[in-house]
Length: 228
Image (cartoon, rainbow, N blue to C red; front, side, top):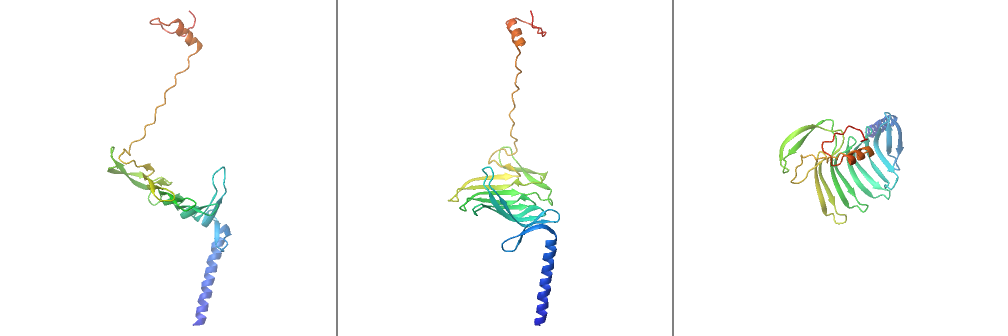
């Protein structure tokens, strides 16, 4: 019985070693963390794969940061955590197929939640979206229409803003497929683009001279001549 258990342990160890060897063999580069985990791996297809730790230095006044999470086939997938360069966590972001998807949270360096965003990522299994059509004078849904889903993340759902220290809700916004829902307003109206006033051409010296000579005259036909 004991010999059987030893054989099972040896076979399991051999299988794990084979799996690990094959996995490493499919990578062109990788690093090892202080605990011996494989991180920052690049597959034979040149795609980022598995757990990654990304360091970004401060640049042109923008603060540096580090973030950690997982790549799948070269794009971010699942939860990612971001830290400032002092090690304080300042954000938890969620991704699907490389785009933001779901709830995103942002914090002060003291850990206070200051903003919570809601995003919808593109889903290739659902290439179309059903969006509500609202009434012209209210937020009442009068119908629905089907539109083609865009291949990027869009603001969708509630966005909340909090007061640091107290956690008091300061403001709340509602988005529907990147469109801000205005309470009680016309959410289907397209903002009118102000018309640009056409600039009149500047008058030449000849034009000014002609107008001066013919000032007060009636039925003057201008033929382009500047002499008398």
